[in-house]
Amino acid sequence: MSLHLHTAAEIIPLAIVVGVGIWLFIRTLDRSDERRKLIFKWVFTAAVIWFVFAMLLPSHREGGFNPLGTFVLILVCAIAMTVTWRHSILDIIAKPFSGLYDGGNLAPEPKPFYSVALSKRALGRPVEAIAEVRSQLARFPNDYQGVMLLACIQAEDMQDLPGAEITLDHFCAAAGAPPKQVAAVRNQVADWHLKFHQDADAARAALEKIIERYPETDLALQAAQRIAHLGGTGKILLEARDRQPMALPEGVKSVGLLASTEFLRPEETDPGQQAATYVKHLEQHPLDSEIREKLAVIYADHFHRLDMATMELRQLIEYPGQPARQVAHWLNLLADLQIRHGAAFDTVRHTLEIIRDQFPKSAVASVAQTRLAHLKLEIKAHQETPDVRLGTYEQNLGLKHGPPRPW
Image (cartoon, rainbow, N blue to C red; front, side, top):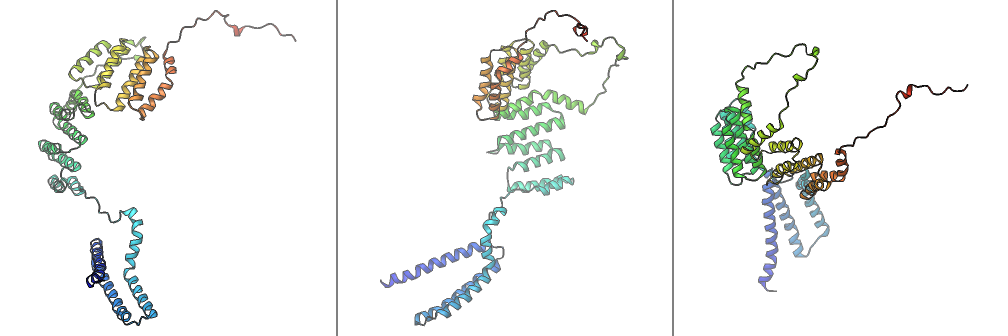
């Protein structure tokens, strides 16, 4: 072997050992909470290793190797290393088990903290609370919790609804804003417009932004449903704010002495008039599922027009974006109307099979399957029982005496 190869064979392993040692030293130093003690341990360990080599190498080269002396020297050094590194060795053994509970060396996930801002808001210092929230949002921009807290302080504590809207508009305009959070933000703005200013038009504009951004989704349907009932909400809020005295008619005296109280029964709403009101409402708000469902029931139960009821429910069922639970509800309602009004068994079965086939392996499919298993009994229970004519029997049979008994 040449001199260069012999030198390389001695230097390369030593370089690898030194490199691994330096890497291990730096890695443990970064993770240690007591760096001074760790540096002292490494220096002491290096001194012990140098001492061992200094004592063994000369005797080995001179051929005077003493096994007993070598054993005693190594034993003393091992005891010294054990005393020095005992806590670290115990940590290495116990760390995998303790890490199951405390996360080990994994760094905690950074997240914003709004406790200081909430405390200052509770103390009636909204300006300082806003400053604390903004300091957290500077580190975690577009954090939903922080943005909503900031907007709530602006709208509810500072009475600055336009400023709150600007804050929430920036959040909604950010790329990657989750749709559900955007919808929640727009609904919150609508709530504030109704609560603070009784402004149904501004609330409607906030909700229409959901429909424009997420058309033909369940979020758009929920927004449309709420828009359809904003008129009644605004009226209730106005009445709650500006209460007017209400004159009540005098009640009927001596009700218990009257021969009849039929005239006190409230008049029933005319189904035709109610249906006309619903149709007019649906012309303005075609996505109002609550009113369309009521209209379908009136068509079936009062006008015996199962075909028109089916048409109304099909509009709800076939509209894109409807949640499975709601579609199953309407299909079950259609099956109820079909059973009540004498539809054929195959027709009702087909309606329930749509639930089972369209939403397999779901709770609504299991309910539909159970109902299919008992469908014949359900249809039979709704069928009219034919009248049974009874014969003429002798009256007061139980009061008559039989023939005298012999003694």
